[in-house]
Image (cartoon, rainbow, N blue to C red; front, top):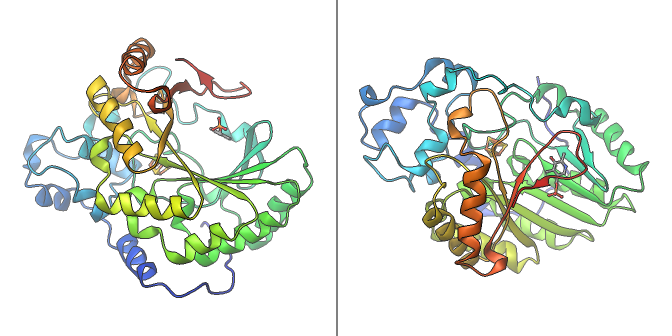
Length: 341
Ligand SMILES: *Cc1c(COP(=O)(O)O)cnc(C)c1O
Ligand code: SF4
């Protein structure tokens, strides 16, 4: 079983803290319940049992509340529904397309690119995105206990070329504020680190996750903090998200977004344009638009590189440069993500 992160002294008490913990324990995990909430008929498109077993349905209620009732083609629903298409095998779509096993420096630490180390700081997420490139990731083997954490942090200590620690997961904000405080303090003690990056979908799917305690921890850090959010469609952002982003921005964080280009979710000029503008309204700049990794069970989300390039060109003709994300693909063995357009 995976071990949780250790934790630091209690941080300032915070009412919102109990709200997000509650939202995390009260997720929608039963396909029948999700359909009932959306007033959809299960017989039209039954959940795939095999897909459910492989990667179970998991959606926070605030995210469900942003789905349009009665609409099977809702772009938020499509991101979480365990569909029958996932069971079809496609040549070249495999469990570990990014060869992350080979990039493991120590338990819980991956390094693929110079200067940056990625910590798998949480074994799970608040939401299960069907297209997830880590849906087959061995979290149990990469969730160190306290002692192993100390060893892994030592590995970072010993490599002065690493300037940036990236907390990824799972979702690193699935940890409690006290656990995060423990980790942030340990990272701050590594003199050659100057940047802390947090890759998280939690401020989007459960905006209450942006607690005062979290903001205090990040604002007080000597590290520059960058948060890379994950939003694929403008409809994912509501007024609560705006407020959460504003609080993160006020705390001095740099806010960026990464999306995945997904068939029938955001593969149109209108959807991508609305997404960039909506992000900008929330104080977030688009960073990457990922071509989906070739993970088994996700081929039906693939849009293709040529269509991706077309969309980026069309977007560039409509929006200022700072609202056009870079279309990227991850090619194992390269020293960075590969920019396609
Ligand atoms: C994507 C990724 C990064 C970050 O790459 P940037 O181009 O700096 O955003 C770092 N480490 C790993 C293992 C990654 O997969
Ligand atoms: S939040 Fe990110 S890591 Fe978690 S399931 Fe979704 S895409 Fe995967």
